[in-house]
Image (cartoon, rainbow, N blue to C red; front, side):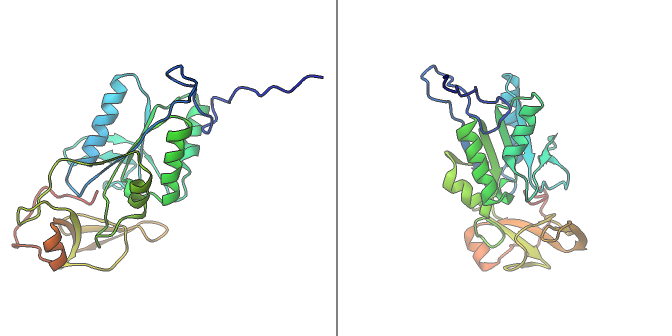
Length: 251
């Protein structure tokens, strides 16, 4: 009578651990990183730069995005750099995205996730699982707090689970010159304190996209975002009524 022998892990199974990289017998592990900051601090630019650097070293990655400012499945930087990406839906299982790549013979070394604040807590947990179980390096980029100054659910879970937390170092200033941390939602010259958590809009009057409905509905409205320091966010003080160029869209 023979004893059954376990077969080798299926290399296309996204939940099968990779072999050790250092010969110690301990499976290699990936890292889950969260780079965060207010609008205009260069998160999307940094995401694309990291992808470029890894690709130059022969590593293969996958770009993911949730609600990019362009309304398209891409990662777009305000300085004009843009790359196509896979749109993450509310019910997307990120482990299955990776598995499909492996089944197609496209091994992945890393993931780049932009607008990660819009992920669900469960999707963040899936990213942590991919880092731990299949050794993917996961780079997430996003805003920490919403227009009310409260943590997005996805950002909260990233703060709880990430191996590394890194504020983006490009300083964004309030109109008063103090460091800006809060993304105020502004309508008709007033800072809004209530409303849907996810509304993507220009920082000048323009198109508003409300993502609380099953399909994004667009309408023309006077709605924009402005970065403020804590004091002026609390006071709702938008400063002198002068044109502000450069703050294009919520990211």
